[in-house]
Length: 242
Image 1 (spheres, rainbow, N blue to C red):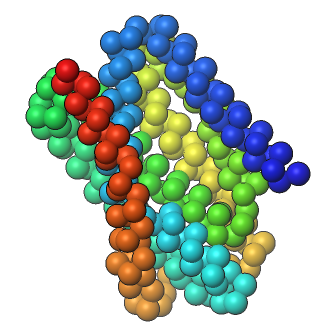
Image 2 (cartoon, rainbow, N blue to C red):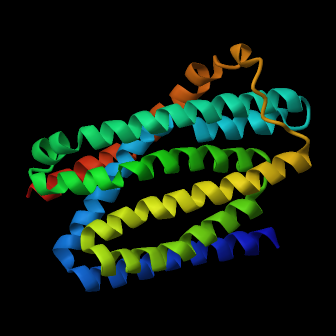
């Protein structure tokens, strides 16, 4: 049954995203659709560094302590969540204020700068959502993860179409932040309910003993993830410059 739920969630999420991409491409044309693609690729590359591997950190330590030390599991989640919030703000700020440099130097198209700035808030929401999905994975609650992904996919289709209708390319890019915020809000609500049922309460005290997990585990996880998205972005940037 769990496999079926996960499968349905994946099909809905990816199917809606694919359909949205097809309709947006037909509506805006290949040049504007290409601009949207490079914006999404840039956001994905920056998000790797903004997330700091915190989602994987949440998965590892919550899975390790959710049955044996619920208090510590709550403390670790609190630390990871705060670190995710800080890194999300920093990443979004770097993308927003560095958009003109990125557009001019790496993409050779200064017209891309406003689009990158519009996409910056999605980095914040995506980073926090990644932490929350990691915590759900640590609780082995893959059913809830499938539900979140399905809802996000279902929201993507109308959000992109409305964005294209109202604001063209900029509207679609703005819709990515709406979609990311939807995932963050939904996963946060469901995670709190799941924590209550598991007897885990995110603690605000005793962080000193847990802060060390960020450099000890999260940074190596970041280096692992950094081998994929930035390389894909660099390849996309080379194509854009052609």
